[in-house]
Length: 216
Image 1 (spheres, helix red, strand yellow):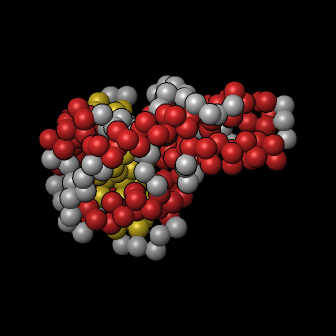
Image 2 (cartoon, rainbow, N blue to C red; image 1 turned 30 degrees about the vertical axis):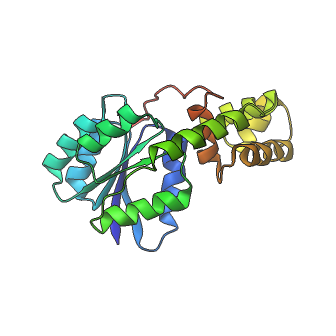
């Protein structure tokens, strides 16, 4: 079993990751944290094989976090996750000597492959820069086709709201919400709600949700 600690402060993203990884027979999430300090404590306590680390956290970023994680869990392999596909961010993550970098707009299967790769000792690099730029342009053009209501639904998803919560807020049925979600997934070329949110933020369709502290 590959033991994993997740360090990310976006609740919906973390919940989706826990469910995704929990369905895999060879992977297990042993702890979750939403700050650098919490991640360091979790790594020291649980000695994970892999740390899934968000690039930007309320109390620090990946380059500084990796140094602290390596001090308390030297055998852990750190896979940095980022919604920022710019070269400066990716270069900073690579220069911090992490085991790999994966952008949050990738499909779930890509993240699983990256986790298994770094756990086996390999290094994971993000996609070719030109491919990322072309993909970003295509997603931006597609994102502009979202209807105003689909954008509002996507904003609710980014805030971590459930289908029922979205329906109550917009005074529509859950069936209608699911239809909106399916259409926006199709338009954005996303495989999940999580991926749709990441793409929506990347191309500027919605704003990133504010950092939120969860109760410890």
